[in-house]
Length: 218
Image 1 (cartoon, helix red, strand yellow):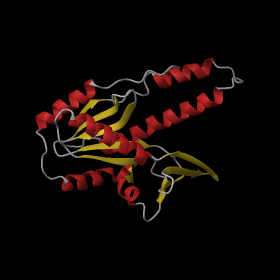
Image 2 (cartoon, rainbow, N blue to C red; image 1 turned 135 degrees about the horizontal axis):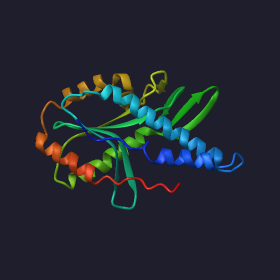
Image 3 (tube, rainbow, N blue to C red; image 1 turned 120 degrees about the vertical axis):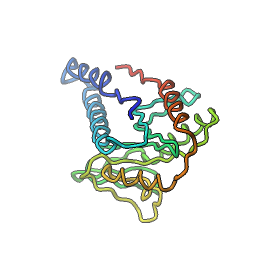
């Protein structure tokens, strides 16, 4: 059951497209804006690719593109939240091609593609922050339920690498095609209900109600 659909592509990407069409080729910000547009389109394609493996997933409520305030003026955003009465699962989805290396020494993600390297914020850190903020928000509602997270690589041709001692990456990072198997393992890890089905539905509605759409200044 999908309670909240992702709406990222509806307004903001269309707005950036319109902006690019109006900018002269020589505009100093054009390259930056086109790069941002490409990144956001890739993100949406990645989430759509993962949707295939979540289709007809029994026993779960799916919330997509959730953005909450943490109460201090900052926000955290969750790509996909899977909810059942045994546990919650945060999915941080990345659509990055080439070879990616999760570097435990400097907590960064390194992409190697066509002999070029590019660094990204480690999505494991992003997902862990989302877990922490969501747990704090749920605890304030006097609800106690385990919250897990995974980093899902949506491009099947992406090569994932890390150090043999980077246990967190080895445990939490996977291709989208392995997602259903990992969910089954989590169901084995949490065989008992922590809350009722009614409570999960109530919680899903509360999370959706607290969603704050991003107000980007084009």
